[in-house]
Image (cartoon, rainbow, N blue to C red; front, side, top):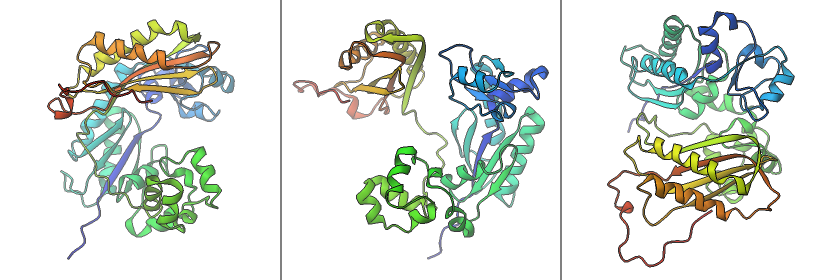
Length: 366
């Protein structure tokens, strides 16, 4: 039997997308350290231009810290309507080459160009043409990673940022991965890095030396995934029509609030989440409440009722009920709240039909 040809996957990542759009549209911002964020004690950075990044400013950083790091920064409030419009233009360029486009966010996407519409002989040429078209038509830059799978392509796109591209060929996969720190693997954060360090693992090459059985004993199913990724194995296809899995809305308060003052905020966030959920034909079953304490601890509570919420009032009531399950000290203060709807499935899924003979509803799950 012949082996199937390797896929040709491109991961395209727009460079400092929100900040670059602002600099493109306002010539006075070009060459200056731009921070896309609302000013204020509770705001966080949405994006930073490369000029601002030289000072250590990064996305998700508190805006006050960004201002301390870069006193000359120009703060621009985010305009997501404009960013979404530009993102649609970028995706239209992608679709000139393939229908197999899987957006990850407004500024990045996977493309499967194993077969491409223009018949270009290599994924490298496709990526070069896409980046050139974005530069010429939209006056923006993008970076790209080209590899035989999504895991490797995403790593590669970060290799020559900004405005560059990098190729990982099948024959080079193991040699490329071996010296990388394990933190480059998706899902390996600081806590997992510490656990791997206790096993003597700092690099992907050292991780590769451990058997699948050892990793499974240590980390369960994720251990098997680590065993595969250490070898550059990732069979996930590019999914152009990936269905909605969850929708959420969150807000950072102007001041830290006690639990007793969160009710109107949770109601408001639930209404916004429900309005967004109504735009998809899929049906969500699980209601989620997220809170972040003043010292940045994240709490979540969730509830999957016997039948999914069908009206806004019902959804809001379920979200509000989750507040009663936050059993923290009355002195605790919260800086952020969020309400989500998850566990989506198709409207005709038989699991959505209530059991007429059910007795008590299942216990809610945290």
